[in-house]
Image (cartoon, rainbow, N blue to C red; front, side):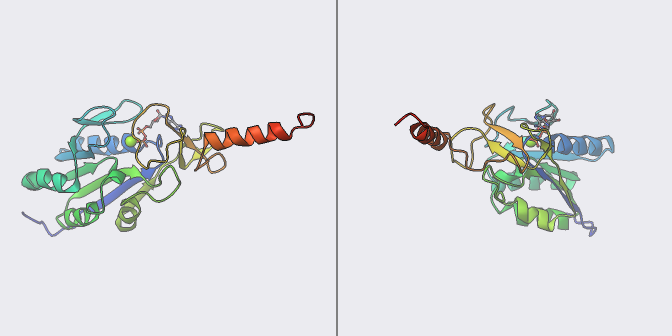
Length: 208
Ligand code: ADP
Ligand code: MG
């Protein structure tokens, strides 16, 4: 492993779903390739929405990427080719475990430009996996907003539309939308709201 002794950089691209993280990652990777830099990109295999061999944005832009099951697997695939690589992209980085943090530190020390895109918060509005730590150690953090689907304001939250409380429900269309602070409902529970309506019906004048 040859280190040129010039540190690399970590650029984190974050924000809610639909904020353009993948678009921005793809834009930076494509520009690096125009500059004749050698680029690789990875994504976790939890995100199989589009294709195993590419990352994709909701606006249908794509970039070649390798799907990996873990940080260990990413490391195994990356290190043999690392001398030939200048730029390393990772999309959906929130789905990797905390081992992604020391890997980022190592790659920066080896002079690499590391681009990591991922959700900063869960559907519950809480910090998501390794992303807050990556933001803390990054050279730059680009925090994007989406458009609130209720009012059109800038949206920093990802609203889950179903009842599931599972942390990871990936890719089913119509399951999530972007929301601003005012319209974000972190613990939407349709069953509870039905019960509220039932109570208000029971208590309505003339019904008892
Ligand atoms: P992310 O990776 O952050 O989920 P993408 O890069 O995949 O975002 O997609 C961004 C694109 O999604 C936008 O350019 C736009 O075409 C589309 N889009 C759909 N819904 C919204 C929304 N509510 N706010 C902003 N962009 C949206
Ligand atoms: Mg994306």
